[in-house]
Length: 261
Image (cartoon, rainbow, N blue to C red):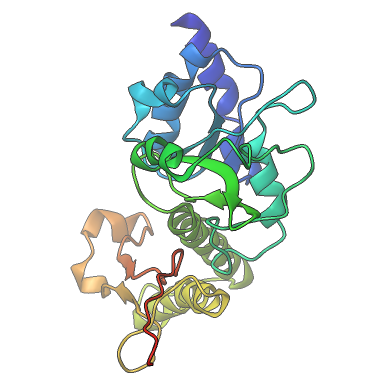
């Protein structure tokens, strides 16, 4: 346990760096459950784990902030699918990509054998939400782009984008304004900063649309009279709240048809 505690202490620095992904390298797999549980409790940040066996995730299989990967290996290729995926999507804007069906990974990532890895062998990966890299119609692709708990990875990236960029936007507003009045004008200024983050994620493709074609998000800001007197006295505003619907994506296509003779 002490070794796990030392690992967690080191990982805390991750949350001050602004990085999104944490990929443990050279760490004993018996320490991964504690690491996964710690990341889960933070509500931001994503742990990417390369596993040797699907059963390795049993102790943290329901965690939504951990994604597991298993690639093919040989004498020249290590199990580095997680870093290969990050390398493929790292320059893309959050909201603009879906990890499922990502292809053209670095040569360091070895797909499952094209001849011996059959469709039925994908089922344990799908059932356990383990991501892998295999040939579909002759093209190596990543499937299914999910977290262990079942959420899609791009949804968690959107969540983290909102949290991190909202905090940055609010900090910039407070730094740029000599004083923000504790009234409707000041509160609306803070609200507009958060709304700008949602507008950008919508432009990136990460937020769905309502039936009227408008972005499907809502930012509310409670008025001063709804705040606690103690918070007002200490100049703390706790009235911002947001909710949104992530944009949907197509990962599979099924075709049907008929021949008219």
